[in-house]
Image (cartoon, rainbow, N blue to C red; front, top):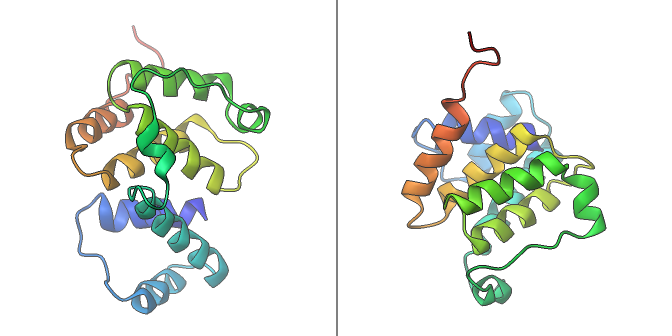
Length: 157
């Protein structure tokens, strides 16, 4: 499912190409790209749930988050997110890329990926997808893009 999300994000959303409006056309395009229908439906559902997170009547807890809350991760979240991933989330929250609400949206969408372990690179892309879908997060999205694409080389001399 994550591969489909990445495909959609890179080929339609991130490239600003025109995305199909008909779900059937999009599904057919994804099948032609080599993805199977059950995974396509999961990915489309994931995106729909991301859009739903912005509605307070669907997820009222998102609007009740205090501005400077400390996140205590559950055991299952700790198993899924390494210390490196949790540290990265804290870092981008501290520098203002995400806030408590978008942090919870990211964690919600990570849990919905149904993966036993999330790699740091996957986390970064999910953050980017969430920020892209949150109105008014253009600056945060640009900062996150810089963090992803402007990383220094592994070895500096």
